[in-house]
Amino acid sequence: MTSSMTIERLRSLSGIKPTGQPHWGNYFGMIRPALELAVDHQAMYFIADYHALTSVKDPKALRQDSLGIAATMLACGLDPAQTLLWRQSDVPQVLELTWVLSCATSLGLLERAHSVKDARSKDKDLNHGVYTYPVLMAADILLYDTDVVPVGRDQRQHLEMARDMATFVNVAWLGHAAGGTVDDNARWDNKSLKLPRALVRAEVAVVPGLDGQKMSKSYGNSIAVFAPAKELKQRVMAIVTDSAPLELPKNPDTCNVFALYKLFATADQLGQLRANYAGGNYGYGHAKLALLALAEAHFAPLRERYQQLIAKPDDLEDILRDGAQRARAIAAPVVDRIRSAVGLPAHPQWPA
Image 1 (cartoon, rainbow, N blue to C red):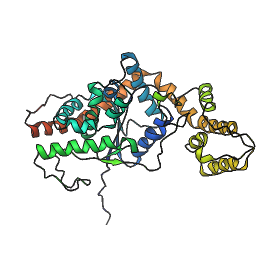
Image 2: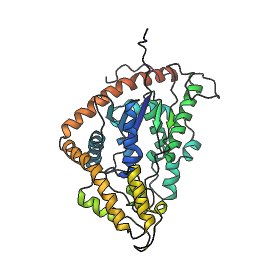
Image 3: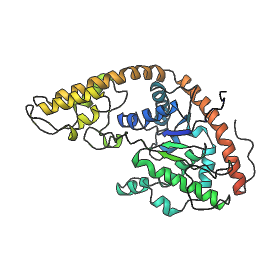
Image 4: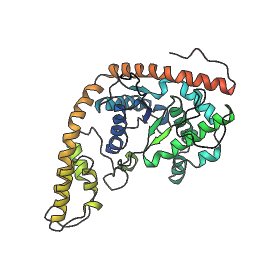
């Protein structure tokens, strides 16, 4: 006798800010790992345009970059028929949940946020959006009864803060007992906020930029995913290396070129490059050309697909609208039950 019972897949959630063209760090650190989750998770992806408002003050750029992120995700393999892709601002429930969470979040918790500390240390504009960034991020996560959130090691704090906020709401308004573990959500009763888990992939390392620091647009050391072939070559050849002469052996484990090559290479290709470094008479210029060849082979088909997608903005808007409608259908019941829990009246007129 065979069983017809199916195992329900865990729901995963990923978001990316529309602030310029995605770079290799975004691709290898977030986009590709997040898209891989769709194989065995109920995967959901949103474009975090509300978050972008903390730094982007150009409305035209924000609209264009939001469509650019949509085209990027689709070009990299997202199937909108199987997964959800939407703009954060197209789901109004996220702001209502943000307010409830704000009323459950201490200033001390926000003061400890890495985003606030970073803004202060670098004398950035510390507007209210930056200060409450973790609250909106928590609402993004909790609004969809998310099970797992793929994060880098440096982003894990935001997930832990979301769990803290959800726990406070569950204890203060829903009468849940404090303490104990809730990693398996054993006490979740479809009336409270589900506590998500961080999904940290150990194999996803920090992607170095041209200068060896973490790749970041703000550092000016990034390589755009869809850079034209000529620009791609210029950026790769600008990678900083030491001054070891051609004839001497070189240490691959301290080389920025080798670190980036690892992102694309097979085990055999990586072993060969390591042998070339150890053997001497192999310059960094040779290594950069080897990296360029792999990068171009990997990204050229994606770049062509991206160009086809971005040339049809109306089609992208249709995909985002469909995704938002499906996301709102998940979000509305969550907000309704939280409204009831905190004493607010029912809100039946949410757009479907």
